[in-house]
Image (cartoon, rainbow, N blue to C red):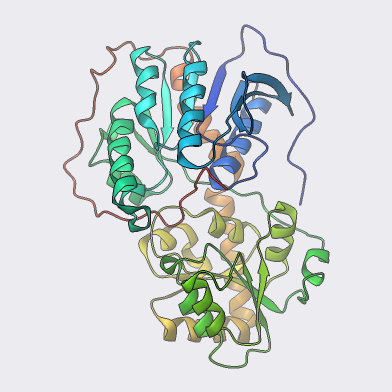
Length: 412
């Protein structure tokens, strides 16, 4: 896989357009979808001549410091606390710092949107990536659901533009905000055309003789159904499952108990080049997410040319298109696994469709270019309106409430 990071650093000058990126742990990416998006958008904008400033959460105490990483300016804000309180404190400090300037802001997530009122009062343009419908997820508990619900409403109110990562999410947001505020911009992935097989063989796998499954071990990701389907019969291939599956979690334990000897739990893998290698050398990818938006893991599988077996829902069908076989239950999944493993012709057709769909919609050049188009609306001519004059008058078009498939939490 090509190294996408240029070593060319640009010094700021008065004529450069400037953007401040908030809401993630920072760069380089080490946590998940939001951080990866922030890094790739920042690198793209850097190469397009922007002065790009990213706020980064670091452990410890003390005043904020600054440095430069690959031509991107970083504001390093120490935060001694973990979890939601640490995230909230970091977000508030980032917003206060950014609000000393008049630069357009790009904010990933709405979990602390109440603090974004500061930018709105100061008439600083703020573009907010709205992630998913986090408040609807039962896993957060009633208290955190209520906090998220309120902050979602506030973000729809104070954001100048709202980014959805999927058309269905945009449809939902249209019940909360004016259509003119909304735009769908997906997540991206770099195409994987070749990869070192060592990360595969070092884990006891044989290139071209296994499938992958990459997601958190929670019921909404259909892992138990997929493992049960794969384990129904001897496959002559392996299923490599990424992540932590220990007996302390009842669902993870149930998955392990359902697994045949051909299922390999490879553990969590954090190095992007290793994940890319494991994807590239696999026969296909199993994607059981049942809810919400454009999932980065699915996009990355398509970028590696994987044939996909995906849960049948509107989110996955829009993302994967003709590059997937779709299942509704264990029987469907078992049949599709047999088809995928037994028919090289269909497998190759699905893989080609995955690559084609990725190149059409999900390259970082395409995704980040859309971010730049939105940012340019505010660089030279920020909206001259009273702070809350254009508050949401939502579309009356109904939309179903859907949960987010995989929350890109800011904690590790």
